[in-house]
Length: 160
Image (cartoon, rainbow, N blue to C red; front, side, top):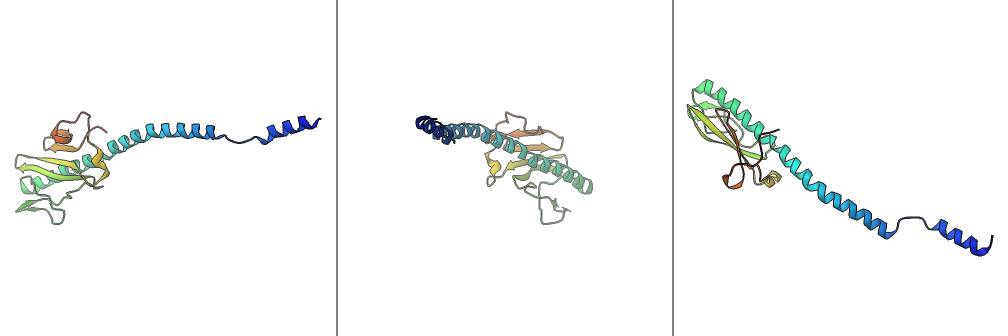
């Protein structure tokens, strides 16, 4: 083996590793994949968190029916700190959903029925969910959802 052949083959063996261009290409591909995946993931998290509003309104429906059995009327006053009372009519029920993502209110109530609303709390990450900001449920079981400015939601917010 000649010295020139020996040095050429040893140079080939010593050149192992990743070039800067290969590293940049890999980082670019990872960046593109992340930019596509993160918004989709965030949208799925917001949609999954809508169950907090649905559960709170359905629990309120049960509480209102129990209240009606005891007091022969429904109530619009929710007070989580006091026991339920027929005079004045008030229901012991939380004004925030279980995970605190929605504010719960009873818009109207009398002997004939009630209408309740779960509105996304502005101080939570769920406030980014503009498609389903407000959930409504009434004593007949009618379920509706609203977007910003009170327009009907374009998606089925009550779907699982």
